[in-house]
Structure formats: structure tokens, C-alpha cells
Amino acid sequence: LSSEYPAEVDIPAPRELKKHYDVVIIGGGGHGLAIAYYLAKYHGITNVAVLEKGYLAGGNTARNTAVIRSNYLTSEGVRFYSESVKLFQNLSNEFDFNIMYSERGQLTLAHTDSTVRAFRQRAEVNKHFGGRTEMIDRQQIKELVPTLNLDPGNLPVLAGLWHIDGATARHDAVAWGYAKEAAKRGVEIHQMTEVEDLVIAEGRITAVKTNRGTVGCGCAVQAVAGHSSLLAQKAGFRLPVVSYPLQAMVTQPVKPFLDPLVSSSALHCYVQQTSRGEVVFGGGSDPYPLYNTRSTLDLKESLIAHGIEMFPFLAKARLMRQWAGITDMTPDYSPIMGASPVKNYYLDAGWGTWGFKATPICGKTMAELVASGGKTPELIAPFQLERFARFQQVNEMGATAASH
Ligand code: FAD
Image 1 (tube, protein in one colour):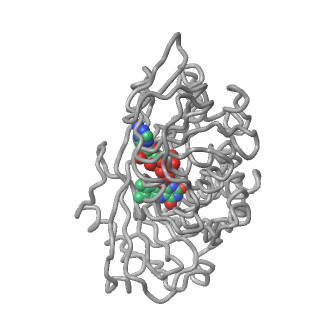
Image 2 (cartoon, rainbow, N blue to C red):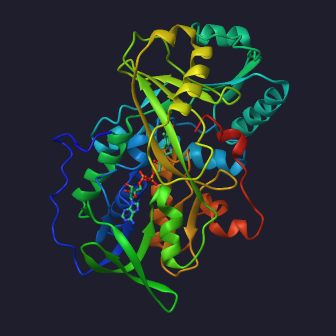
Image 3 (tube, rainbow, N blue to C red):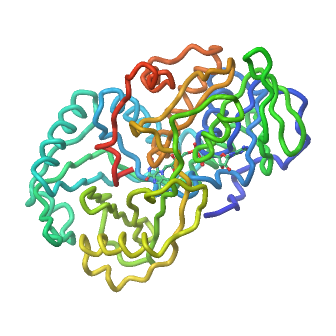
């Protein structure tokens, strides 16, 4: 995790908060910053403040394992995340700043017949909606990842889902890029500024109360990830979100051996190698809700055991770091974007373990929503909060699992 950004990331030093902004964005993670950038860039809305209680993008944006992919299960999911992958591909040019976008492909392993069947369905849905995903057999997997153990324990690998568009990027750089480009256009980014309460009059948000005073707003967006349901509570409504810790860990750098991102939901583990040679391990969320970013020995032991089943020679590698973030999980493993029960108060929440990859498209569509005064863009319409009242969940559980 890094709180220090490079010299070329020019963000004006903190100043006094104004009395009023057209838009207040609560949460200075990748999502909040992306919304601010697209508001300024495409809609000319620059009287905007991003309020961040800690340091810039020090929440889940700094803690994620940076898997970017669009091989989801539902048509709504594939269409949405495919647009995000397209935006990612041009972000370095757009920012004139290297976000280290790296197209590696993502391989998900099937160890049972039922997973093979589910993967076939995903491959077809993906192709239909523009993603590049196909089924591959054991021989093809061997050629793609020669170092992978195809017979871990009693779970031999039967086939794989190969997603050519799978990629990774430097998470901090994505946030810094959005921050510097938003600031260049006049957006104010205030770190160490916590929103403690919301002022709501006649069902409409009028101001936010911060540790640095009250700030009026034309509208507000909450983009606070793990703290989503706490802020919604202050707005006077409940979100179908429960926060769980999600941990990850990284080894010392080793020689390059792994180009694609590899994951297995049966083994609750995914593995990737960074451009510096470190091996990143991630898995499922902790099994109980908690607002705490501590690391646990339990998780380390079980995750590494599975990682070593996949790549036995890593038994000799040394772990360098272990960390956690607080993830805002929804019952259908899809996000919540759009209007809320409070007028002019918009939701960018429920990103759980999968929201880094959505940063660009979520920012772009949420900016459209805000700029239009509440007209929901078609691409995010399926993800509105009201889907839970209409029983129209977008079930991505099977396509999220240990892949994020
Ligand atoms: P954040 O970056 O958490 O930003 C929210 C900000 O809001 C924080 O900085 C916080 O300090 C601030 N905040 C909270 N409350 C307040 C308040 N009251 N006032 C002011 N500020 C406030 N996703 C993927 O797509 N791929 C992955 O590989 C992946 N791996 C992950 C691995 C781990 C270990 C974790 C923890 C998450 C992972 N995710 C992944 C999920 C992803 O990190 C998040 O969904 C995404 O970063 C959410 O971005 P955000 O900007 O909404 O949240």
C-alpha cells in the first residue's frame, strides 16, 4: 500500500472547503475519483469535491489484486464489464501516465463435470455479448501454463475457461491517473475529510457534515465500498450489503514463470505473477462480517496450501506481505448503482470483491447519471437498488467466487 504518489501526479495541496459544491463525492477511491473525472471531462461539471476520510485511494483500491476481466455469467454483467475492459485499454493514453495495463489472459480451472457445464455456458454468453472466452482442454492448459500441477490432491483439472481479455494494471496508478486528470480540470480532492453525517430536508440531500465543517451540495454520490451500509444508514435507508474482510498476500520476487492469471474456485485460490516477479495469492472472503483489515494465520495457511497444490515449487518461496480490505458484498454478487430513496443522493456500492475492474465504466456511467439529474444509463439500469424489491437480481455468484 502506498500513500505517496509520484511527482507527475499533480494534485493541489489541501485547501479550505467551499461552502457549497454542485456535486459532493464521498469516498476518494478509484470509483469516486473516476466519477469526478468523467463529470469534468464529458459534462463540464467541475464544481465538484471528492471527500476522502483517509489518504487518496487507500481503501480497497490500494488493496485489490487487480484482476481485470469480463467473463461473467449474465448478459447484463458481460455487457457492463466488457465496456470497462475497453476503457482500461486506453487509460494510459488518456492520462498520459502509465497505469501498467498488461493483457495476460485469465485461466479458470474446472475440476468437476458440473463446473465444465457451467463454463460452457459462460463461454457462450461471453461470445454472444462481445467477450473473448473459450473452453480449453488439459493439453491446451499444459501448453499455456507448463508449471501448473494438473492433478492437485483428489481434484484433477478437467478443462479450463480461457478468457483472452483477462488483464491486470497497477491499481494505485489508475486512481492517481483519475485524480490528476480530475484535479487538472478543477475538481477539488480533500483527503483526511470524513463525512460524518448527511443533511436531508424534504427527502432530498442538501449538505454533508464533515470533520472539517458542513458543506452544501446540489447532489451527492456515495462511493465508500466497505462502508456503504454505514453511510446509507445515515441517509436513512438500508442496503442489502454485508461487509466481510477479504485478504490477499504476495511472495518475494521470483523468476518469471506465469503469464496468465490462474484461478480455481474449487481450490478457493487464484494466483498471478506481477511484472516485478512477486506471486500474488488471493481467495474467498473471510467467513464472517467484520469492519477490520487485520490479516489472519488461518487464511494464510489455507490459501497457501491451495496455492502450493497448484504450483508445488512455490513451497520454497517466502511470503513478503499479507493484507486485507473490507468488501461490501451483495446477495447476488452484482453491484448497486443508481438512484437511492433520497433524492439527489446516488449510490455506487456493493462492489464486494470485484469492483476494481469496473472503475472506468462505473465512473463514466455514474457521471452520466449525475449530470442528467437522475436519468439512469441503460448499461447500469439492471444494477439499480430497486432490483431487490422487484426480485430481479443479477446473479453472478458462480462467476465471481475466487476469481474476483
Ligand atoms: P475504495 O477504494 O475502498 O474507496 C472508498 C473510499 O471511501 C476509501 O478510501 C475510504 O477511506 C472512503 N470512505 C469511507 N467512508 C467514508 C466517509 N464516511 N467519508 C469519506 N470517505 C470515506 N476487484 C477486482 O475487480 N479485481 C480484483 O482482483 C480484486 N481483488 C481484490 C482483493 C482484495 C484483497 C480486496 C480487498 C478487494 C478486491 N477487489 C477486486 C475489489 C475492489 O478492490 C473494490 O471493489 C474496489 O476497489 C472498490 O473501489 P472503490 O473506489 O469503490 O472503494
